[in-house]
Amino acid sequence: MSHHFHRPKVVGSPAFSTSYSLSSVFRIGRHSMIKQTLFTVSLIVALYLLFNTFFLSPINTNTNIITNTSEDHGNKVKIYMYDLPRVFTYGVIESYAMSRGGGIVSDDSQLKYPGHQHSAEWYLFSDLVNNKAAAIIRVFDPEEADLFYVPFFSSLSLVVNPVRGSGNSLLYSDEKMQENMIDWLEKQVYWKRNNGWDHVFICQDPNALYKVIHKIKNGILLLSDFGRLKPNQASLVKDIILPYFHRINPYKGDIGVQNRNSLLFFMGNRYRKEGGKIRDMLFEILENESDVVMKHGAQSRESRRAAMQGMHTSKFCLHPAGDTPSACRLFDAIVSLCIPVIISDHIELPFEDVIDYKKIAIFVDTASSVKHGFLVNLLRTITELRILEYQQEMKKVKHYFEYEDPNGTVNEIWRQVSLKVPLVKLMINRDKRLVRRELSQPDCSCICSNQTGISSTI
Image 1 (tube, one colour):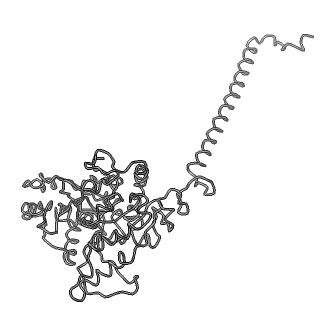
Image 2 (image 1 turned 180 degrees about the vertical axis):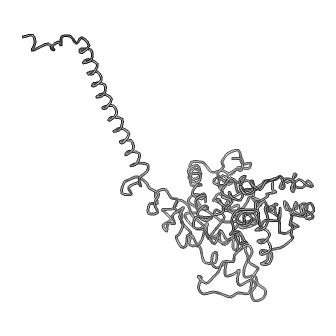
Image 3 (image 1 turned 45 degrees about the vertical axis):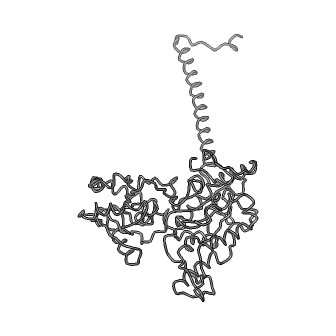
């Protein structure tokens, strides 16, 4: 009965047994390979579905995961805008118009903010009034606010011509307006609560709020440069550099040099004080160069037309320091796709965390710029290909200098303001634990509260 338990032998085929064993091994091997392949395919499919679900597909807004949709404001900074007395907002516009022959306007919506380089204060105010801010949230309950915006039109107030009434009495004074605004603010509970650290002020003109700047120096200052401020009043750590509102129309054409016959263009006041004295020296060096246009001109409609024509037809636009390091012509040049040539040893530029200015501008130190032949020889060595690269980069970033662009300057300013919130919270908490004392010689090697603001040495 052994044949029931043993495999039958085939007489005369000794190779059959070996062949049979090998075929069995092959079958087993193929089966194992199929299982391994199926497992690998299944794993790949599972990983793809996992990746597609959590990384490629839109996040379900019904979950607890924070999304970046317009309906969800979880991560956005909340700003409360003070309802200042009218005299500090619309009243400034009205006084400006009256000092130039206008009359009282009963409907504020009929008031037109005069278009000039400090229009940022109007655009930020309007953005909050119309509740259109995209980068932040306007809240109407101050208890919900992270920051408090003070919408005093300080730059416009500075240039209101003195208004005189009967008996030659002065009806409008910028200094008095500044003092009155501070008197009003110091009565507000939220100003006193955190020593002003969580307040935002716009003072874009270099002289705006100069009378009271020492009282608001803890706040976030929105300004164009630090030319008139002391190191303990302003710094890049807590404050924000704004671009001026460009005064000329942007260039509508494409990149290229075909219609740009001038090498270098400048139009502005030749004679300035302080840091602007270099302008006269540059005029002497450059005005006789055949492919350089240097024009002396003050602010006027005719001057703006001439400046637009010059910038739109030049490869490079000169940007020397004025009475302060910055000026609006820098931003006129950028929207004109005219490569800025910046002659300034101390200049701060807006939005440098997102804009690499070395890609859109040429920087020359003051000492080198006034050497005969240095500047024009430098510019003439720049190839057409390199000029096109500069222009292409300017096209990419010029929306940052367009106040009327919904994704432009205003949105970026609010984003920059939002970035200051962690520092604001740090200073508030630090103030709470420190025993306040007057320091005759404040230590400026660290962040100082008390009366010293934030040191520029940080």
